[in-house]
Length: 117
Image (cartoon, rainbow, N blue to C red; front, side, top):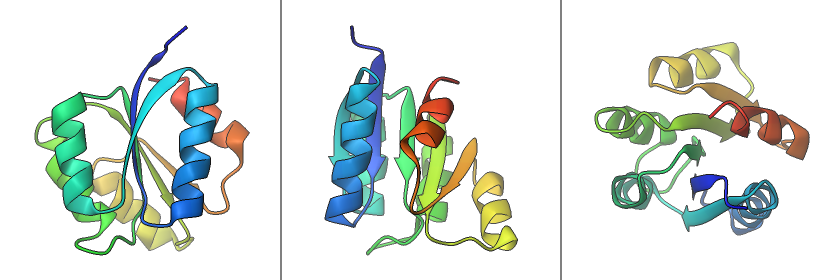
């Protein structure tokens, strides 16, 4: 049973693959990208229910990508990042994130977030 659509924005191939697998296990059809611009366009094109967003991306960061996405989408947005500083989390929430997970993430944490959308 398909639960909805997810977009994964992550420049690390292994982490992107892991996020995709976990979301597919939870029943999402997953579209994956590796840059901020591709992520924004994928959200525009696929109108997902959930978006996972890395902060450190090669073109512009996930904070900026999240701000851009929030201008046209209400998808449940989860920042997934190696940055553990409280200020980084606050910037993520201010940019429109609904949740903030640090790497390495645990699949159950992602599942909990994905059940909210």
